[in-house]
Length: 286
Image 1 (tube, rainbow, N blue to C red):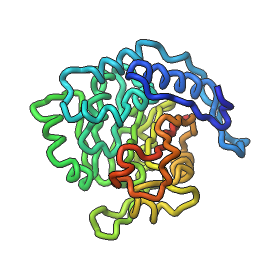
Image 2 (image 1 turned 45 degrees about the horizontal axis):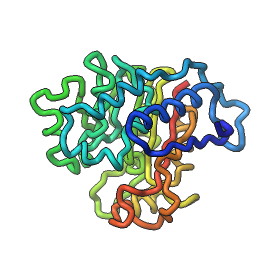
Image 3 (image 1 turned 45 degrees about the vertical axis):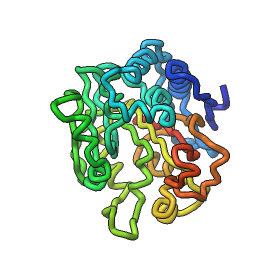
């Protein structure tokens, strides 16, 4: 185990069950002691003590990924999305209420719906542009009450209305950077990440987990530039924003890190697409 002040869990990419177990090891370690930045804050609260995650958690994730009702297009994406890794870090349990933030077509919304079961609920949240980019995927995924425990919600991030203390977990997959986007072509409305998080954080229960997966930009670069030109973000900006919103940093995983990505190419460049250097951060609400 590495020093929790500078956590880095080396998670290889074996089959899904093993990935889930590796993720759970991260969860147990991250929850046993607060992960701190290099310059430790004297006012940072201690992390809650919790029991280690169980094999039941890994089994539920594996069952969700193996579910024969999944869309064929989703199964084709599993190899590069590595969903067991991401879902394991969320610590999902049956009956939870969770949000897939800027869910797009809902790949993760569906998987989470299986893990939390019929007594839980997934909020598949999009703003209008994300819903447009998703094309017909939401209709395929949710039509005919196909996933009855998923609720679609569309609103501007700064107008998102959620019940206070209603959510057990939140997931951002390759989407948080867009809240910093100031598009030159007008295809994306102006968004304020601080306002967006100010809407989300009060809806999280105490102890709720937030997992953020995103494409890495060069250190110290302005997100207004890197997001518009590359769709990347400096991980330090992510951590700064979520901590400023009142969440505690709870560790990171290097499972999606790729040292061969030099951070200079747009994420849609064919030479790097689906293999970008990505950060995975986990935060927790005190």
